[in-house]
Image 1 (spheres, helix red, strand yellow):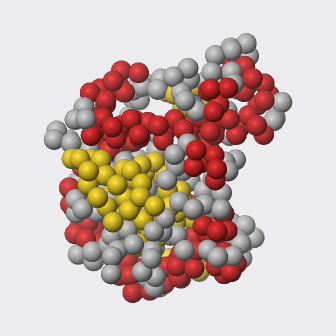
Image 2: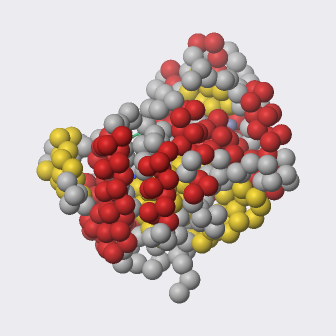
Length: 374
Ligand SMILES: CC1(C)O[C@H]2[C@@H](O1)[C@@]1(COC(C)(C)O1)O[C@@H]2CNc1nc2cc3nc(N)[nH]c(=O)c3cc2[nH]1
Ligand SMILES: [Zn+2]
């Protein structure tokens, strides 16, 4: 039986951990490194599936926690599954809900069995376990489902991080047992907090369970970026080269290029769509807050070098006007730009890897992009 998810290595950079590949799924084959737009509640906010396809999105994210609470996975299954329900015929990856319970749910109580919490929607008492989270994702029919884990908070004491990471491994085993569909791939999630030995232990335990891919969790949780990079350096070399590595919740262009250099293949982040809705756009020179007064008479596009629909057809002055007039089209244009910007950035980075010029690509990136203090 062929695996639902298969990673094909196309080119390994000779000087760094960067690599170009193809991720084969039941809903198509997609180039890596890849950025996955986030569509938490079965929609990438303000985008239509047609627009996402046109800009080259391959796999998008949705979320177990949110869809379990509303509209409920049974309804989505009745509608023929998430692809049909949301009109998306390419790849879907669902996060397992672990992280969201910790960052959104209220009054949560963790036990070996799972997590009791109150819904952030109506305060009702809810419970998620490795079995329930897996069954919900099987019902949603996503191509990739994530194991139910605990995202170790930052900072966390060593003993807490160790106990939590060991429980995440036990939960991953329970997800494997509960996983019931051969046309979906279940990824384990490496934890370990900011402790190198726990990262190594988590990677070893999970790879012994032979998942078709691995999430790298417990990062992008408020830690300084240098610490995230350090944990990556201690994790990706301990993961199989013939399986995809997915850094969860990351990120902006700087984290994408630094993550790719350290062997990451897949990324997701709410940042580009979230900041677009309040008028912040992403360019190679960093952020450009197009709704600011300085752009009131600026007839240039957000980014003159950008091939997106917004930059090809509209000016900063027009988009600023739309934001000031509270017109929905404004946030649609900034969302189109931010997603196109990251998707195109990944395409260009992949081409650089294939042509053996990744280090030159990274160097040029840092010539333009603002360096942060941390
Ligand atoms: C919840 C929301 C909207 O997603 C952003 C943003 O807030 C926020 C909240 O704290 C900051 C850092 C400020 O950024 O972190 C999110 C992006 N970082 C992230 N997403 C993750 C998802 C994850 N899923 C699972 N199952 N397991 C994980 O370990 C995991 C780790 C993750 N790290
Ligand atoms: Zn653009």
